[in-house]
Length: 269
Image: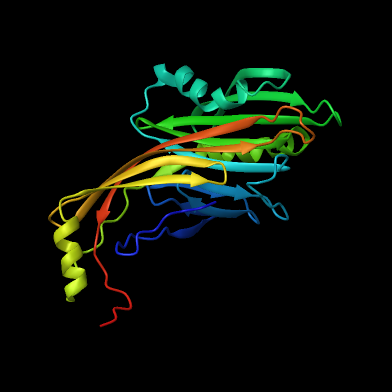
């Protein structure tokens, strides 16, 4: 997956800590997800991408065996759950595959939270392999936490208990604001960019590898920034050979704050 980094802007990195046998991975926007022991977890613009041991993900492959993504939506209202699920599943539902299980909703309770599971399944008409897409949804303090699972149904189903646990233990911590300091390095080039960017909005357009979206950062004159964005990942899980390919979309609406600084790297005179 392709991410974008401005050569002149510095942003804080994510932090990783331990919670029992699970590894807590904190996304830059503040939400945390606990990946089971042995799983890999990596932040990307749309959320945290998680893979079980010995499983790899290829964004250019249409039949990845399994993929799990955690994300968060802010300002969530339970009455809008149906609309949110419709947005999440629209690419998959409209893909043209023959669906054998269509968005069935199941309630569940774990760790003192209630949640919902939505599941779709379809069969590869060439080899008969059953594929699945599942969304695990919980909410707390007007934030919706989502774990998306895509891939072969036989691989996803045994992960059900782990996925429920992940969704039920997701949390949020406001990103720590770095300490204030100079807004730019003391070089002519950095000072020039400071005059250009201070008080401006920078837009980041994301694309490639099944990923699309937009982020906007307002660089406030006092050195703080506020970021908001919408990102979508389409994870192809369909068959080869010209048959319909299903795409599961994970939409993450995010907002966060931090500090910005302009750095002059490798200046030549």
